[in-house]
Length: 334
Image (tube, rainbow, N blue to C red):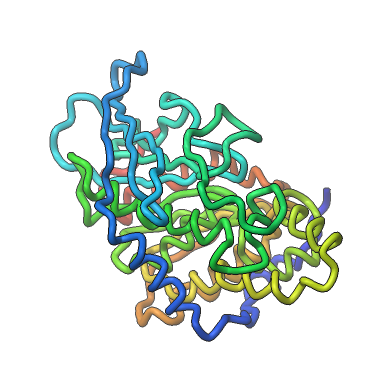
């Protein structure tokens, strides 16, 4: 698939207006306040993985409405001092999988929390373990349309709340330097990391790749691939409900979260990405931190001949070196 979005020179200057609901900040303040009423950690249990150089625990923390959310917490074996932490969010349709699957950040010397996606995990990877007790609201069967008619019922209200609570959870775990916590994700995970950057004012860094839920209305005009296609298919059946859907989606728009963020940010995007069109990532990057009163370090890396996979391992290497520099650690070597 050739490049289908704006030319790169236009993307670099792309700063679209966003239609924010007037109660956007109140909506999220009230939502997170409700979640914060529960003690965050419910269980932390050692897990045998067969790995000699990594220690892992199964974690249950309380997310939206106090619901239990699963995660894997891993750190290098034999290291006792507090470590900077990476909270990682998985892609759409994935769960936390198996504890030995994602070891890059642990091998780089970080404490690592991988959050499960509630009500997901059945499309890719090796499954999840977190149900969504609130998934019976009107809407379609896929997560992207569960509860779509009403923002208070929407799946991503719950998932974003879980993502914020995951940062609170990792800070409560032993061996974590709570002042150096980064949010990391690709695709849906990138959208969650961006939302966390906008909702957690003292985050140390955000690494956001091919983010879902960025420039949502433009994405719906450009592509029927992936999760956006689920929304289009829903609206093809529920004719006349477009404005209600757009209103709900405006509360989870990544550009709005980006405007409120303050942490240093590292973006990645494939210019041939038809799943999460690159204009969304550029819009989020270009409008990043404009309401926060700070001017954080930010950069974006584009891969002209790549799609949703973006820079893949090349980009991960850039992330490793960038985060080490931002957190003033020894950079990765290779």
